[in-house]
Structures are given as structure tokens and as C-alpha cells.
Length: 371
Ligand code: PEP
Ligand code: MN
Image (cartoon, rainbow, N blue to C red):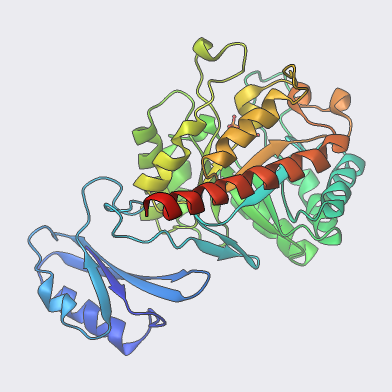
């Protein structure tokens, strides 16, 4: 059961303590309060856990400080919408808001290779007004003979360069829980010039111990990438591991499914699931057109498949786009063939904004014509 407190009542307030005391009167019920920072207000939710199926709602609804009581369904207890009753308020990180109403582009390096390429990337982002990027330091590769990422060695310069160019958040994959500490330390040493969103890659989508470890820390939000060979339900349950371990600041990212039915693309594009995940969960939803398409092919209209596919995600309401760019794709140590060029960045950003605008217009039209 979730008790939603009225606006601006904080977890440490007397009102919340009263609700928790009431919950503790029932056997085998525990309560934990969580603060949610939305764009316009701060919200506190009290989660009642344990034997709650027979718990009455009324004693909680009677508190003047309680806005509503939500009886949660079995599925997606922590991340679920519970048939629209739970709001998708999102979260704040480094001064940016991430929710089902916001839109952010994360163009950047699949893998960090040299300081010069990293700086060229960040400089280009600044020129188009983008403050969010991707940069891989720990790369999960299919073959042990392939470049595995520079790891800890590149973190310091990546963070310093990010700070220099006004990058506020870097999406960075981790493949082991020890990487969280390495990132924390490097940020400390660099003087916290930027923020990091920990990326859980598709290959680790069901690495439950990693999910629990990342869920137990609250310093960094998490970008969870859908498992490429498992059902949507299995991927959403993986996010439950993150949330029930304590970290609710999660973005769910679609990235295509592994099957040769998607040929000639690297993966079969699944961006039709953007509104589905928004309906089932409270999480902002991202799309990664680069790992979905995997190549720089274009159609007779001259637009790259990667751009078309990104647009498909955005027109369906995606809240973020993670996309590979590289200043010199021919020299990239990972995924060069799918990297867009810096000369294509302005078109990518403007096209994405145009399509986002079209999505917002679709919503208005729908409301105007059918209510
Ligand atoms: C990535 O984004 O660098 C990546 C490896 O993606 P995925 O986990 O979706 O394959
Ligand atoms: Mn890649």
C-alpha cells in the first residue's frame, strides 16, 4: 500500500511519523517514507510493506495530511503506475528534471578513447546547447580480444573535460559494483564537476546482484537498458530490483531486441513500447537508436536509419535519446560503424526537437478533438 502525503509534507515531519506509527500497529507491516521531487512540488510517499493485503485503507485516509491511499497490485509494486493511481513525478539530478514529461538528448561516445576525442565531443555538444551525454569507460564486449574500455584510467579526464564544457550528466555503463566506487572517487578527486547516471547494459539486465548493489546506493540515478532477449515483463521486474533496493531514480531505455527478424538492422526496433512502459510504470522512458540499428545506412530521403528510428521513439513520447557520435568514427575503438559524425549533430538535435514538438502537438490535438 502507498500512502501519498499532501504537498510539501516531508518524510521527517510529525505527520509522516503519525502515519508510520499507525502502520506499525498492524502485525508484520513495516513502513518506509520516500521523498519525491517533482517539477512543481515535493511529495512524500509512505510505503507499507509486508502483510498489507488485509490492511484497511480508512484509518490512513482519515489523516488530514494524507492525500490518497493506493492499494498496489502485485505487479511492479515499486515502479508501477497501479492503474494510473500513482503519479509519474520523476526525479531531479544535477539541476535537471527527468520524468515522463521531460525530454533530454544524450549524444556522445560509445566508448571513451582519447582525451582529444572526448574534448571534441563535449565541445560540439556545448555548441548545440546540450548538457547531457554518454561516455563508456567500462565496455562489456562480446569478445575478450576486443577493447574493454579504459576503465578507471580515463574517468578523471572525462569528468574534468565534462565540467569544462558544461556537461551536467554523463550516462556511463558499469559492469561491476566496484565501478560505482571508482566513479565516486574520481568525481571527488576532480571536485564534482559533473554528474553520472549509472548505465546497466542489456547484457546485465538480469544480473540481480549488480542491480541490488546499484539499487542500494542513492548517489547516482540509473539508466536501465532493456534486456535484449527477455520479455518486457522480465526487464520491468529487473527495475523492481533497483527500486526495492532503495533507488527509485531510474530511466528505462529501449534499445532493440536480438533476433534476425530485425535484419538488416542490428536489433529489432521496439520503440512501439515507449507508451507501454509509460503506462505500466512511473519511469521516464528512453530510446537508443544506435544500438538498435547498428549501422549508418540511409534511405532514399537521405535520412539515416538511426535518425528515422530515433524519430519513431520521440513521436511515441520518448523522454530521452541515447545516441552514439564520434569525432572520427574510423578511429573509434568500439561501435565506430554506427557512430554519427559531429557534422551531423546539429541536424540530429534539431530534427529531434522538431519531432518532440510534433509529439506535443499530437497530445494537444487529441485533447482538443476527443477530450
Ligand atoms: C551501450 O549503450 O554502450 C551498450 C553497450 O548498449 P546495450 O547495453 O544496449 O547493448
Ligand atoms: Mn556501443
